[in-house]
Length: 99
Image 1: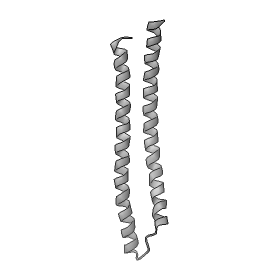
Image 2: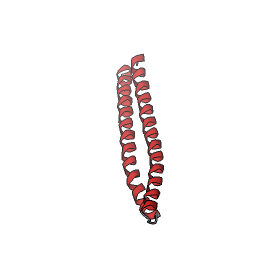
Image 3: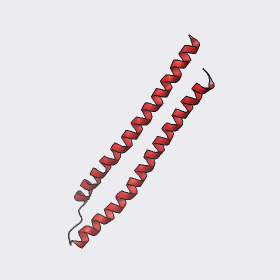
Image 4: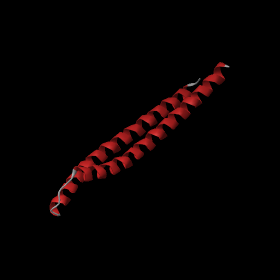
């Protein structure tokens, strides 16, 4: 197997790492956004002279996390496929060289 094959595999791993880092950063941002939304919810209830209830807030949070999870899952799946494809390419090249 030549250096370009190894380089392709390393690049695929780096791309996967970058994609997962991006997903983690997006999730972190979502958590910060969620905290801001919690404050907004509490202030909304206060301004309307209503009780802020945990159940209502958890329903809102659950919907938000569902969206975030789908985003992270899609990015992780994409990263997996890219890495798997690169690994299969390297394996095929290795088999050509050794057979």
